[in-house]
Amino acid sequence: MISTALLTDMYELTMIKAAMHAGTAFRRCTFELFPRRLPPGRSYGVVAGTGRALEAIQSFRFGSDEISFLQEQGIADEMLAEWLASYRFTGNIRGYGEGELFFSGSPVLVVEGSFAEVVLLETLLLSIFNHDSAVASAASRMTLAAEGRPIIEMGGRRTHEWAAVASARAAWIAGFWSSSDLEAGRSWGIPVSGTAAHAFTMLFDTEEEAFTAQLATQGIDTTLLVDTYDVDEAIRLGVRLTDGKLGAIRLDSGDLSTEVHRVRRLLDSLGATKTRIIVTNDLDEYQIAALRGAPVDGFGVGTSVVTGSGHPTCGMVFKIVSRADSDDPTAEQRPVAKRSKSKATIGGRKFVMRQIGADGKATAEVIGIDVEPRADTNDRTVLVDLVCDGTIVGSEPLQEARQRHERARAELPLAGLRISRAEQAIPTIYVEPSGGTADNVYLVGKPPANL
Image (tube, rainbow, N blue to C red; front, side, top):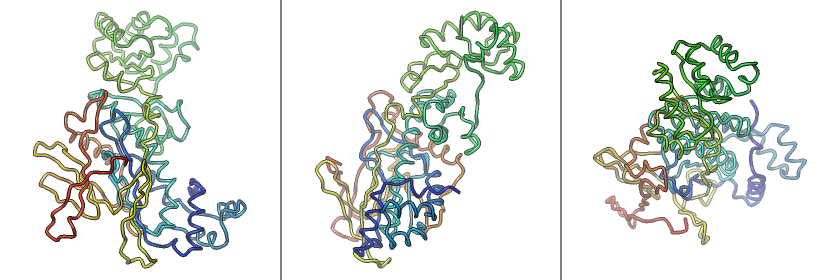
């Protein structure tokens, strides 16, 4: 098991060292990981990375090599080094289930424990959730635009080699059908797919030799790439070699919005009425949406999905929201918050309820501040237990996250399904206790304008 302990910012360790010497490092605290706001033009985000984060927490251990490095760099003194050597996260984590939707201010993770053990996880958690959720959010918009037609994730050649594996996982949660990345298939059980590139065709003296070789090993249900030379001649060749039973052709260039109509007519005229048309060529959700009325049977997406389609991070932050005044693990925590003009936060532990109307559609994201919001019949709580007293309890098959996403997206109102110039699908509403009364009357509040 490779340690993830140094996948962290130096300031986390310098804070812990200073807090240990000041006697405050082991005060019980609650931190929240949340996005300040959705990216412009997005109506919702998708939580992804939870399973990866739980695995990373398990391997977050400081061995002798890591501690020696920290001491050599002057980062860890003897007191800190001794504590790091036995570090294990012993706190609690609640969070949005993987695949769930999130909105502005949504507390995607609520992490509770001593200041030292929680703050140490900041960079690890943010790096996973910011990346994976950005990919899943973009992928969800693409599968929404595709309207049930399959999309293959093929961005492994457009990002860091291990980011490609995480991206394939996140895209699959959001509805992609398969990935071209073999490590993603091995690591996460994601279906993999792939056929041939232009280089394969150019390896042979003729296109017929290339197609014949591919058909011989992959069968007639394979997908032939037909735009290396002349598209029409390649299609006629593929149909002839398979007696009209060719599985699919792929277009990777040209004006797809007009080309696919012409190609469909050609295939039909040749009797290949069941041959599918797959399109690639730097697609994103906007181009996929533009092809809604075109005879396209599937898509391949690379660069745009692994880079979050213009928003490579969700802008999530990790902030302390409450703390105790002593090391006593039973001590009551009190809210704390930043008051800076442009980056204020809301203190207090959060509880979340997704408000659902009689028609089954979401109407609001209700966040209770130090209080659990009242729920009507159709409403549902969003936060689930992920870690309890240091024990991981939230592990689940990846299929569960995929199904959760499908159910959550189905709750979106019509306005939340827009691709272009979308606004947040449902409002974020904050509630707080009304003066400590016991009759469950709450005041509806709004987040600070600069949150």
